[in-house]
Each structure stands twice: as structure tokens, then as C-alpha cells.
Image 1 (cartoon, one colour):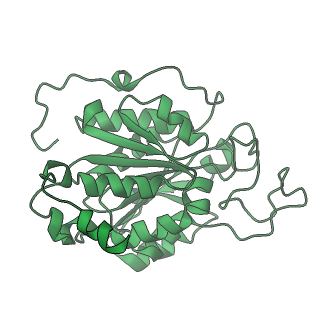
Image 2 (cartoon, rainbow, N blue to C red):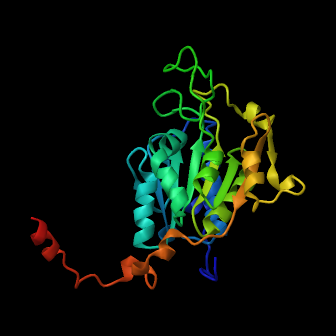
Length: 292
């Protein structure tokens, strides 16, 4: 990547720690494997990137990827990733969240991370249910979806993460599917390479608690945007129109444009990352004394 690591010899298994504890058949395995393969193609070593995890089944990935990692509070992954990116904007940062974590309790952070164009990647594990807490509706669950928390069916309209990211100003918006590993790997590679906020919504079936949004359900409906004649990922309104489809489900890069990342507008870190700056001569004593 950018001429680095000419002697790179890592394999996807080099990022393994221990066997994941996800249910057999869980879509998280597909995301896990696609991410590791993307890291190899990008020639990133475990010490060259940080993954910030939220709470939920996706958050358990903190135990299964060898890298710098931070297990954040529920809904606060993007806030932690923002702080890390501003501390060292030359470092690669990936945020991993579930759909409830990322666009539910963390929805406010999602909105502002998109509009600020923070320079990191957000991968959303979208299984349309709360899996770790044994099956309640999430923000992406469909109307009428019956769970132990909604025995007569969900009455709320679901959040569309792709459409939300487009509306909030993200400069890279994509959707993958855990059972399309080659395409998902390629999407993750392009997301990490992108300068600015890159968002990847990954459809991933929960085989234990979600009996509606199954592999069969998705396999009958998905198609790839890169195979659509004339599709232009630089056209916002074309991307927006595609994001509203639900009978057929498009996968791929919906939208990608160039715009200055947030940190590029900060004079304090324009010349050098904060972690490389000498802060020893800075004192806040006068400020504290003035107010206290």
C-alpha cells in the first residue's frame, strides 16, 4: 500500500487470535474473513491500524482480530474512532458496529461523523435484529417483524442505513453482503483507501434469531451495481434512487466523491499529527486558576 511493506508476508490467518464464538452460520464470519483478506491486499500489519468496536455480536470481534483494538461503550464507537483519528490522522482506523449500536443508540454520532467527513471507515454489521440480547427488534427491522419485544409485530418504519448515510453527507457509501465475500473484500479495500468517511452497510443474516432476513431471502433479491449498465457512483441522485429499492437489493459502491476530510481543516494538526507534536511546554494551569 503506497509503496510500504515490500517484504510483507502476512496471510489472512495471521490476523487470527482464537476461534470466534459466533453461532455457526452467522454472517459475522463472512465479514471477518473479508476484512482479513482486505488487510492482506492493503499490506497492513496488525500494528498499523486500529479497530474500534461497539457492543453486540459484532463487538465480540474485538477478541478475534489481531490488531490495536478498543471495545467502546454501546453507540460510542464513532466518537472513540473520531478521537483516535484526530490524535493520529496518518493511522488507519476502522469502526465496527451492529445496526442497533451504529444507527440506534449511536445514531447521533453517525449523523455528525458523516457530515464532518472524518477520515476513517465504518463497517455496519446489519442483521436487522439485536442478536446478543437474544432477539429483539433493531432500528433496521421491518414493519411487522415479530420478536419477544414486539410479539404483535414492529410498528416503526425501519432505518435505511445507506439512505441515511447519503442524506448526512458521507463521501463513500456502500453496501455489501456477508455471503458475497469477494465483492465485500473489494468494497472494504476501497473504503479503507478512501480519504474521508467511508461507510459500508453489510447485510448479514442472524441464523439464530432472525428467520425472516435469511440467506435465501437475500440470495433471491440481491444484484450488483457494478453490473448495472450506466451506473455512476459519482451521481448523488442516482445513488439515492438505488438506496430506496427494497424488492431488489443493490450491492456495491453507491456513492463516492472527493471532499476535504475534517482533519485537513484543522491548522493545529495540518503540518504534523498530534501524536508527533511536542506538548511538553503547554500548561493549562493559568486557565484552571482563572476559573477555579
